[in-house]
Length: 122
Image (cartoon, rainbow, N blue to C red; front, side, top):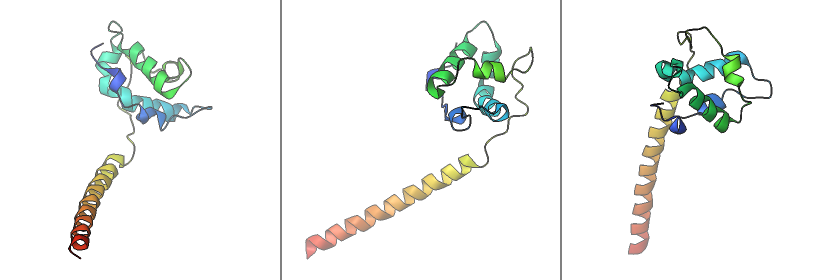
C-alpha cells in the first residue's frame, strides 16, 4: 500500500463515532471523511490498503473488528464519496483560534520583557 496509514489523523473518526451503540450514519460519514481522500487506493483490492486502514482504525479507535467494513457497505464499486458531510467550520475556527493564541503570546512576551527591564532598573 503506497499510503502511510500509521500517520493518518484518526480523530476524524474517533471524535464522532462512539460506542457502545454505534450510529451507522454518523460512523459511516466519519469513516468517509477519512477514507474518501484515498478512494482509488482503498478500492484497489490488490494493494492491501483497505485492510491496513481498517487495522489502524480499529487500533486507534478500539472499535470492534469489522465494524466499518460491515456497517459502511455501499456497492460493488466501493465507497461512494459524493455525499460526505464535512464537519461545520472546524478548520476555519481552529485557524482563527491559533492565530489569536500567537498574537496573545507575543503581546505577553513583550509585556513580560518590559516588566523585567523595569524591575532591573529600580
